[in-house]
Image (cartoon, rainbow, N blue to C red):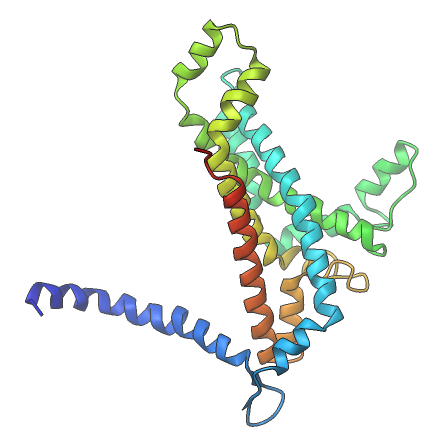
Length: 286
């Protein structure tokens, strides 16, 4: 091996060692754990135990159903809002645009515990501002934390509030990369603003929107913070328990690491399949 190659590998060695120790080996080890019975001491090889239980576990299907509900409802709403926000933030008529961009991005940098506590206070059945507003307009107060449907709506609202601005900034970057002469030509042809949006802006933003969709799918499949902190570990009665909480409960509450590893790989596989489906739907047509 040439000395220059050996020197290059020597410089890469610390990174490769760290990568193997803290990333590659845990992934391989967790996959091997999914084929072991970790409820006995010592652990023993039981290839069908965890995967067989996963297939017939009602609690797993409940968590999967809740996760998919959030995915199907929340992600499209968030991406649509993010696109509208990005268009508004890109408007030359908007004054103090940097301030608004920071304001929309700010929820991402807010501490998770702090924002969860604020949402619990805002949606409190007794003294929350949301219920007070509902009463003021003649509607009945909602028990946000005692009703599974209301709790699910609360999770969707919280996740959308936190991540819509983040996606809007990504889409805004895509908007600013669209050449201005495209719109200038459209204006010369007397194309309306509405037609420009649907026939120029959206088609050119399609790769960026698909990218945001893939990121959102991956994030939703791992969703943990909001249902854990806001609705008290996926309550009421498991009504907002996601796959992330189900994984946590099996791994760190029940200490069933083998079953938790099987759940983790199922989450990863589902995220990959749904993301690939999004990429296939959004592929360029020749």
